Image 1: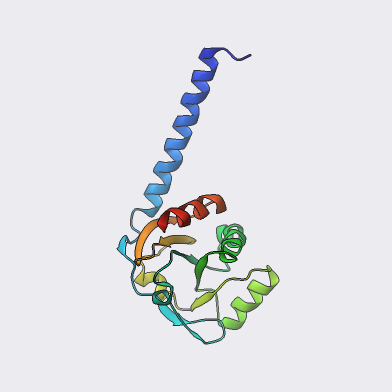
Image 2: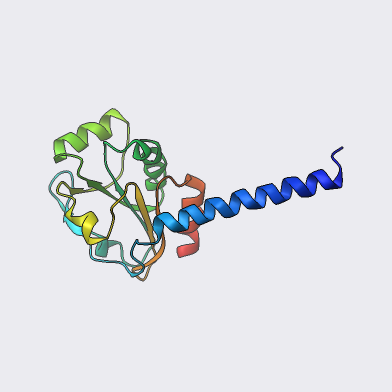
Length: 164
Protein backbone atom coordinates (compact mmCIF):
# COMPACT_ATOMS: atom_id res chain seq x y z
CA UNK A 1 0.00 0.00 0.00
CA UNK A 2 1.38 3.38 -0.99
CA UNK A 3 2.10 5.77 1.78
CA UNK A 4 0.11 8.98 2.11
CA UNK A 5 3.24 10.95 1.22
CA UNK A 6 3.65 9.05 -2.07
CA UNK A 7 -0.01 9.54 -2.98
CA UNK A 8 0.25 13.28 -2.34
CA UNK A 9 3.40 13.47 -4.49
CA UNK A 10 1.65 11.59 -7.27
CA UNK A 11 -1.37 13.91 -7.10
CA UNK A 12 0.89 16.98 -7.14
CA UNK A 13 2.74 15.66 -10.21
CA UNK A 14 -0.54 14.88 -11.95
CA UNK A 15 -1.84 18.40 -11.24
CA UNK A 16 1.36 19.89 -12.70
CA UNK A 17 1.02 17.81 -15.88
CA UNK A 18 -2.64 18.83 -16.28
CA UNK A 19 -1.75 22.51 -15.81
CA UNK A 20 1.07 22.29 -18.36
CA UNK A 21 -1.21 20.61 -20.92
CA UNK A 22 -3.92 23.23 -20.38
CA UNK A 23 -1.37 26.05 -20.67
CA UNK A 24 -0.01 24.65 -23.96
CA UNK A 25 -3.55 24.30 -25.36
CA UNK A 26 -4.37 27.87 -24.37
CA UNK A 27 -1.13 29.15 -25.95
CA UNK A 28 -1.79 27.32 -29.22
CA UNK A 29 -5.37 28.61 -29.47
CA UNK A 30 -4.78 32.16 -28.21
CA UNK A 31 -5.05 33.77 -31.67
CA UNK A 32 -8.03 31.78 -32.91
CA UNK A 33 -11.28 33.71 -33.27
CA UNK A 34 -13.87 33.87 -30.51
CA UNK A 35 -17.38 35.27 -30.22
CA UNK A 36 -19.63 35.17 -33.28
CA UNK A 37 -18.34 32.58 -35.77
CA UNK A 38 -17.01 34.13 -38.99
CA UNK A 39 -18.86 33.31 -42.19
CA UNK A 40 -17.87 30.04 -43.79
CA UNK A 41 -19.22 29.05 -47.20
CA UNK A 42 -18.05 27.50 -50.42
CA UNK A 43 -18.25 24.34 -52.49
CA UNK A 44 -18.26 20.79 -51.20
CA UNK A 45 -16.52 17.83 -52.80
CA UNK A 46 -19.18 17.50 -55.50
CA UNK A 47 -19.45 21.23 -56.12
CA UNK A 48 -22.57 21.57 -53.96
CA UNK A 49 -22.89 24.80 -51.96
CA UNK A 50 -22.06 24.40 -48.27
CA UNK A 51 -22.14 26.90 -45.44
CA UNK A 52 -21.88 27.10 -41.69
CA UNK A 53 -25.11 29.11 -41.68
CA UNK A 54 -27.05 25.98 -42.71
CA UNK A 55 -26.16 24.43 -39.34
CA UNK A 56 -27.71 27.28 -37.31
CA UNK A 57 -29.86 26.01 -34.45
CA UNK A 58 -27.62 23.10 -33.47
CA UNK A 59 -24.04 22.76 -32.27
CA UNK A 60 -21.51 22.02 -35.02
CA UNK A 61 -17.87 21.02 -35.02
CA UNK A 62 -15.80 22.90 -37.62
CA UNK A 63 -12.57 21.07 -38.47
CA UNK A 64 -9.83 22.72 -40.54
CA UNK A 65 -7.43 20.04 -41.80
CA UNK A 66 -5.13 19.08 -44.65
CA UNK A 67 -4.19 15.74 -46.14
CA UNK A 68 -0.49 16.57 -45.81
CA UNK A 69 -0.78 17.30 -42.06
CA UNK A 70 0.53 14.39 -39.92
CA UNK A 71 -1.52 15.32 -36.84
CA UNK A 72 -4.65 15.61 -39.01
CA UNK A 73 -4.15 11.97 -40.02
CA UNK A 74 -4.62 10.95 -36.39
CA UNK A 75 -7.46 13.39 -35.70
CA UNK A 76 -9.51 12.79 -38.86
CA UNK A 77 -10.74 9.33 -37.86
CA UNK A 78 -12.11 10.75 -34.60
CA UNK A 79 -13.77 13.61 -36.45
CA UNK A 80 -15.33 11.16 -38.95
CA UNK A 81 -16.66 9.10 -36.01
CA UNK A 82 -18.15 12.24 -34.46
CA UNK A 83 -19.73 13.10 -37.84
CA UNK A 84 -21.81 9.91 -37.60
CA UNK A 85 -23.96 11.43 -34.85
CA UNK A 86 -23.16 15.16 -34.64
CA UNK A 87 -23.04 18.03 -37.11
CA UNK A 88 -19.53 18.37 -38.54
CA UNK A 89 -18.19 20.67 -41.23
CA UNK A 90 -14.67 19.66 -42.26
CA UNK A 91 -12.68 22.21 -44.24
CA UNK A 92 -9.98 20.67 -46.48
CA UNK A 93 -7.44 23.49 -46.55
CA UNK A 94 -4.64 23.47 -49.14
CA UNK A 95 -5.16 19.76 -49.77
CA UNK A 96 -5.45 19.83 -53.55
CA UNK A 97 -8.56 19.71 -55.67
CA UNK A 98 -11.81 17.90 -54.93
CA UNK A 99 -10.69 14.68 -56.66
CA UNK A 100 -7.49 14.53 -54.60
CA UNK A 101 -9.43 15.11 -51.36
CA UNK A 102 -12.08 12.55 -52.35
CA UNK A 103 -9.34 9.97 -53.07
CA UNK A 104 -7.69 10.68 -49.71
CA UNK A 105 -11.00 10.27 -47.84
CA UNK A 106 -11.79 7.00 -49.63
CA UNK A 107 -8.29 5.62 -49.10
CA UNK A 108 -8.54 6.34 -45.36
CA UNK A 109 -12.20 5.29 -45.03
CA UNK A 110 -13.28 8.74 -43.82
CA UNK A 111 -16.84 9.96 -44.28
CA UNK A 112 -17.68 13.52 -43.32
CA UNK A 113 -19.01 16.62 -45.05
CA UNK A 114 -16.07 18.46 -46.61
CA UNK A 115 -15.90 22.08 -47.70
CA UNK A 116 -13.09 22.73 -50.18
CA UNK A 117 -10.47 25.40 -49.39
CA UNK A 118 -7.85 24.80 -52.08
CA UNK A 119 -6.22 28.22 -51.69
CA UNK A 120 -6.39 28.45 -47.89
CA UNK A 121 -8.52 31.61 -48.08
CA UNK A 122 -11.23 30.20 -45.79
CA UNK A 123 -8.62 29.24 -43.19
CA UNK A 124 -7.07 32.71 -43.33
CA UNK A 125 -10.54 34.28 -42.96
CA UNK A 126 -10.85 32.30 -39.70
CA UNK A 127 -7.28 33.20 -38.60
CA UNK A 128 -6.28 29.55 -38.87
CA UNK A 129 -2.53 29.36 -39.41
CA UNK A 130 -1.92 25.90 -37.99
CA UNK A 131 -3.61 22.58 -38.61
CA UNK A 132 -5.64 20.91 -37.39
CA UNK A 133 -7.78 23.66 -35.90
CA UNK A 134 -11.09 22.70 -34.35
CA UNK A 135 -14.02 24.90 -33.36
CA UNK A 136 -17.22 24.03 -31.53
CA UNK A 137 -19.97 26.42 -32.63
CA UNK A 138 -23.06 26.61 -30.40
CA UNK A 139 -26.64 26.62 -31.68
CA UNK A 140 -26.61 30.46 -31.78
CA UNK A 141 -23.57 30.61 -34.10
CA UNK A 142 -21.03 31.58 -31.43
CA UNK A 143 -17.65 29.93 -30.98
CA UNK A 144 -17.93 27.96 -27.77
CA UNK A 145 -14.49 26.29 -27.96
CA UNK A 146 -11.43 26.58 -30.20
CA UNK A 147 -8.22 24.60 -30.23
CA UNK A 148 -5.26 23.87 -32.44
CA UNK A 149 -3.57 20.47 -32.65
CA UNK A 150 -4.82 17.07 -31.60
CA UNK A 151 -7.94 16.75 -29.46
CA UNK A 152 -9.43 13.53 -28.14
CA UNK A 153 -12.73 12.30 -29.48
CA UNK A 154 -14.25 12.07 -26.01
CA UNK A 155 -13.16 15.64 -25.21
CA UNK A 156 -14.75 16.94 -28.41
CA UNK A 157 -17.96 14.98 -27.79
CA UNK A 158 -18.21 16.44 -24.27
CA UNK A 159 -17.66 19.97 -25.61
CA UNK A 160 -20.34 19.43 -28.29
CA UNK A 161 -22.78 18.24 -25.62
CA UNK A 162 -22.00 21.25 -23.43
CA UNK A 163 -22.40 23.67 -26.37
CA UNK A 164 -26.08 22.89 -26.78
